Amino acid sequence: MPVWTLGTLPLSLAVGFIVQAVIGIGIRLAFAVRRGNARELLATYRTKRWIIDTFRLAIFSGLWAHTYSWIKLSIPILHPRLFDQQLWNLDQAICFGYSPNFFFLTLFSKPEALRAIDWIYGSAFSPP
Image (cartoon, rainbow, N blue to C red; front, side, top):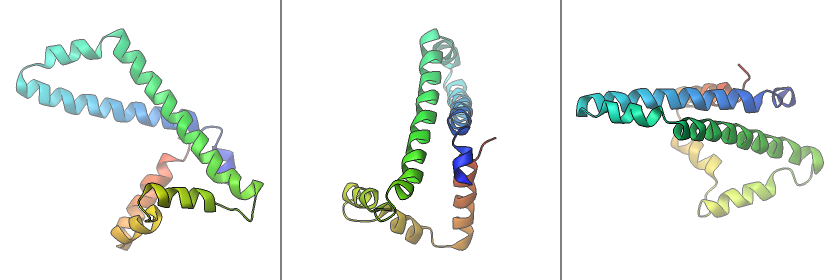
């Protein structure tokens, strides 16, 4: 049941964002080594401000995804007739009249691509 995973969702997503940040650090460091300015980049990464900002972004991202998940799961429970129509309409208004769900499915209509996307999406919202 999806509701059971919501308690662990903020922490698991925050950890996922930190892992992504570490991967990004590695990629940027590789380019900096090629350009010869790796020391300056490492000095930036070692600053207290950079470390605190990175962790703040990871925590905020985890909380944001947690809040989004609660909204998406609680609307059908609180008002079954409403379901998700207002959020659906908001998505269409933001995306110039196109439903992002239909656009995405049409864009990636190959079954293999959809399975890969489902796996990635499912692993992002599953506790570690």
